[in-house]
Structures are given as C-alpha cells and as structure tokens.
Length: 103
Image (tube, rainbow, N blue to C red; front, top):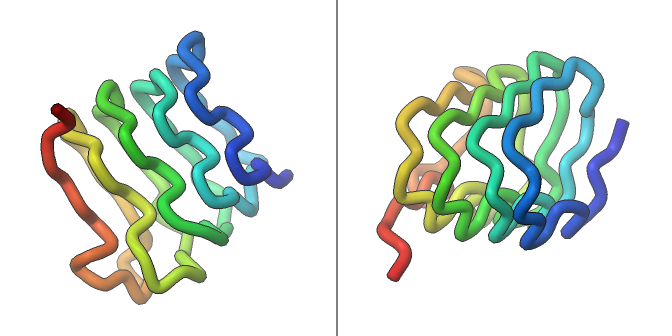
C-alpha cells in the first residue's frame, strides 16, 4: 500500500494510524495534520521529505523497518514528539531528525 504525497496534508480529523500494510510514504503525506500517533511494522520507504512536517500533535512515531530515500529530513517541526522508533539499520543522518518548536 502506498500513501501518496500530501495525502493527509493539513487533515485535522486524523488522530492515529496503526497499519501493517503501508510500504511507501510520499513527501508531505502527513505534514500539518493533527495525527498523534503513527505505527507501522511493515518494511517500507519514505520517498520524499519531509513526510512529517509541522505535525505539532504527534507524540509517537514507530517505523522500525522503514528507510528513507531522501537526503533531507523526514521529520521536522514536531515539537511534541516523545517516542521515535526508526530502523536501526537505516542510513539516517542526524539532520533528518529535526525537532524544534512551532511558533
């Protein structure tokens, strides 16, 4: 299953996604939406950047089998993020995990 670029962009009714079926998540798919939790235990890829941008409510992001195909961050401006579980074998540069408060 593919989540297209900007599929849930700015969607305010989205709270939680827990899916075993997603294999590809496009650029900006969850940017500026109200999601609080995203969990996926499937092997997959983030194809663009940032996938999660300006998601001020997200507290939990669990994607232990995902890799990123982008050289840019896939998480940005997520000031309330408390739990992050990403692929330990993934090539993820430190600037791909950008946490700073939204004003």
